Length: 209
Image (cartoon, rainbow, N blue to C red):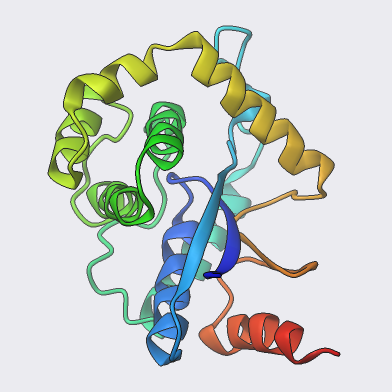
C-alpha cells in the first residue's frame, strides 16, 4: 500500500506553493515515495456569491498583506525558491483551477494529476500566468496528458462544482481553517512548515505503537 500525506491547499496561496517546495525537499530524503492526497480548499469561499463569483473584499488590511509579503520573502529564501516570481496574487481566481485539478485527480492516475498540479503552481507563481483562464487550464492539461476539452467541460460542469463545494465544507468540518494544512494519521501541521517538521509529522506518527 502506498504511503500518503493529505494536503489541503489553494493554488492562489503563496504559502501552499512554498509548502510544496518544503514537501518536495522532505520527499527527496525519503527512501519510499510519499504520495499526495490533495484536497482543495477555497480561500475565497466567504467572498463569493451564490454563483461562485468573488464579490466581496477579503477584509484584510494593509498591515496584514505587508506581513504576509515579508513571510513569503523569508520562506522563499529559506527554501531556495528562486523561481518564484511573485509574493502575493490578488487578481487571480483559482476556483476553476481547483475544479480542473479535482476532475483530473478523480479521473486519471496519480502521476497525471501530479504533473497537472505542479504545472498549475508553476504557471501562476513562476510564470505569472492567469490560472483562472480556462484556455491556460486547457493548455496545461494537454501538456499533462489530459484532453483540453475534458477540462473545459469539467470547469463548466455544475455537478463537479457542487462536489467541490461539498469538499470545501467537509474540510471545514474536519477543522481545517487555513492552508496549506498537512495531515498524516490523525496529526496535522499548518503552514509552509520546514521539511524537518514534515518529517516529524510523518515519521513520528509511523513510530507510534
